[in-house]
Image (cartoon, helix red, strand yellow):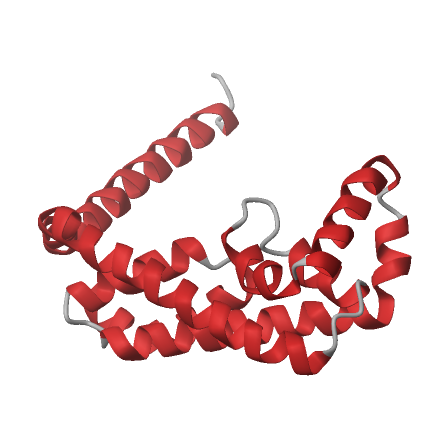
Amino acid sequence: MDVSALISQYGYAALLVGSMAEGETITLLGGVSAHQGLLSFPLVVLVVALGGMIGDQVLYLLGRRYGNGILKRFNKHQDKIASAQKLIARHPLLFVPGCRFMYGFRIIGPLLIGASHVPPRVFLPLNILGALVWATLFTALGYVGGEVIAPWLHSLDQHLKHWIWLALAVGFVALLRYGFKRRQRKKPHS
């Protein structure tokens, strides 16, 4: 199993799916992979931005359609929701791209924006802009971080096969030992 080959083959697909749901961690890993030469830096940025845009667009549309009903279920947080919606109404040009960078707003932000009825013609270009800035920043951080962890990753890739064989050997010995002990317990005592 060659980890580098797997990343080269499936890396962009993993980045697309991962950036739809979570984002930062997968984007940083994409940057590290670009540093290692396994993926292309510009393609990592574009794929991650696309995944982030798609994920936020879906949440925005859910917010426009079902947002008020969903948000009413958060009884304890109604004050915070109302405050966020006032902020969205006053500063949509800052909130839409900025919610990607606010801790705790990565998922709920687009839902709140949709429920606040920010028009699609305003949301879409700001979503694209925010996704491109976010993807570029976090991919670049991963790329720079790749310089720090590159020696560790190289060592891991070299020794990964050895660790897998060692784990299989230990597992096999443990299984044999368990089998012998079980067999000893089942033997009738004479």
